[in-house]
Amino acid sequence: ALAGPQGTLYGASSQAGTIRIITNRPDPTGFAAGYGLELNTVEDGDTGYLAEGFVNVPLTERAAIRLVGWARHDAGYIDNVASVRAFPTPGGCITNSNQPTTGCQLTPERAKKDFNDVDTYGARAALRVDLNDNWTITPAIMGQNQESNGRFAYDPNVGDLEIARYYPETSKDEWIQAALTVEGRIANFDVTYAGAYLDRDVTVQQDYSDYAFFYDQCCAYGVYWGDDTGTPLVDPSQFIDWEDDYKRQSHELRIASPGDQRLRFVAGLFYQKQEHGIFQQYQIQGLGGFLDGTDYLPIEVTGWPDTIW
Image (cartoon, rainbow, N blue to C red; front, side, top):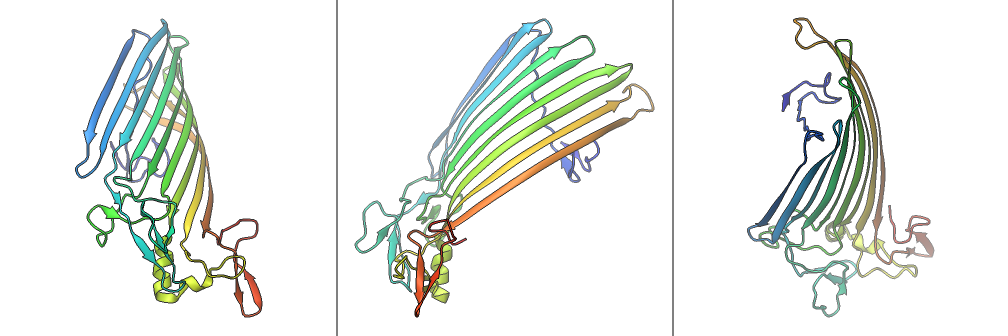
């Protein structure tokens, strides 16, 4: 942990300081392996586990590969309880109960105990090659997939560690990163190049029915939403599907004078490019348009069924 500012030596936007994580490198001097297993329980929740391991394999006297993998399950502790929600304006009701409620429309999400669990899987592979006594290259690749369910908050009006949700709430976060490090010496100066490329995709589903319910209570929100015939929807609840796409590449070249000298310097160049693509789709099931007197006013976004925004 390095106190800030660190923007000069350890990347951009590091005014408050930097936590620098240095993973173990492949070691050509000998074979090594290890693993760790964990089983845990969460109070008022479910059971989780963690399994992780590594292996270091020398390939030659000057080359080695190191492989690391992990699998983790974080237990849920929030209960999605059976509930009925009535909309004042359209007069309809919805339920997430596993037992159908007379007159109420079943929603896609169901009541479930400990519904906010998380599964994470990942691996890392690194190769180290000592070209000679002065130069070393280390290519590496790392990836992870994380899938989570539910919501990590509760509603005190429903109960302790309890909430009522009617539409799926999930998140899938996938990323992969490739990197290359080249280290060497020119005369007495240390030279380092570090480059990396990251591709990350996040897909999210979110229940937005609270918005619909409270706006219907205060402002007759439900009257504005109808199907293709103009009939008011029984369930005007909104839900969201969205995707985030991240891409980032960085390159750094650094030269440092001998560290044992009283006067020394570090100089370098740094380049970074990043992109963030965002797509959010707010939807209402069965949405079409509505009738306003003699005029038919379309509601759906053109080309996107059930989508209001």
